Length: 347
Image (tube, rainbow, N blue to C red):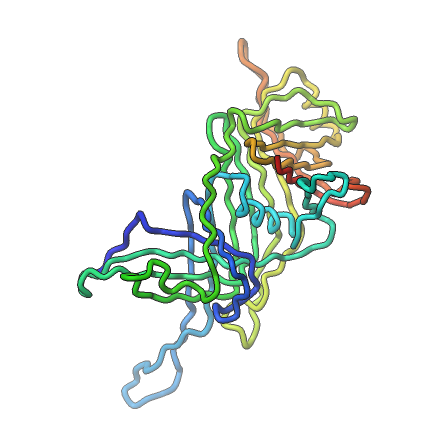
């Protein structure tokens, strides 16, 4: 019998396009702080239709496979968030802001060209084999050449800022390694693990500025956020192909960014914005002292408004869905037609 040690699970992530472990080129894997995972692989096996004398199937073989991952966690100002945001904004590199002589400001813009950063996600779980003298082993599973399909940030009024990131993989491998004398047994040759960040997550009490909703003139509408979730979907789909056990490609289609939120408000201006399809913008800043991310949806319109007429002695409160639309913005002297952008500011 074998059993896993629940205290010895490690999730690591790296940017790499390799579809097999033998082709991995990265030399660093970042250990991620996660609160939950949904890591899947599945197979599609077929029986042979050959006729035999006993009228029984004699062969079953795996033809195609599928693999995907979902990582949940509390958002931090750290390298793992930097990697996830690159995928969420479909950019291969953070763009330095030349107006900041200190070099501490950079940004990502959806709409400055579409890239598809691909990722390796590795889960290492330790287990003990009672039938082998109680030896410790590493159970290693790797999802390769993964493309992000959806990313979300959730802010509550009494919690940490949470993220959820979903990927579809173009490769999957697994192995078991004897870790009795080497805790890193089975790791990819030539790679090192960068320890997980010890920085506290962004929290709702003092790390957030916004979510500010502004009118077309840039004037704050003075709405107060209770809860909100920004969801970015890539319009992704798998392209199976002859000669490929996994999907040969994970395509990305229309970029869909939405903010679903509950707001308190002071007057009926928001009803006017909704009923008359007026342009608004949304922005928020996450700052923990070590650094900040400023996320901007430069043009949004209200897609759904779930207000009930306020009752006696109740506050004005409504559930809204803002849909981000493409518009021109100027960043560091360059005009981009974009749906969303994020600035990274190292303090």
